[in-house]
Image (cartoon, rainbow, N blue to C red):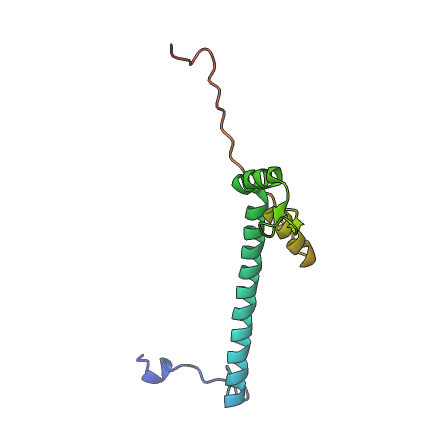
Length: 125
């Protein structure tokens, strides 16, 4: 029994079944929806990046050391006449206020600590 070429032909779609967008307006709507989804993904990534950057600024050690030095300097003067003064503005406080204003939650950075002491048994003399 020999099978003809009609056996290999794809099965025709059922009448009335539409696969994918058919008109130009449907194509434009699909393209617009795809762009919106892509933009939503990028906005989510940017929000995560902003949270990470703000957290890094809040919890980094070098900024804390610079702030300590700036607070020890005392008042900041506008000019040599010493008539206009202000307290120093510190970065971490400003970043924290901005984060609070925009409801951005900061998260502490994960630190890796290592033991700096050696035990007496491993100490080489």
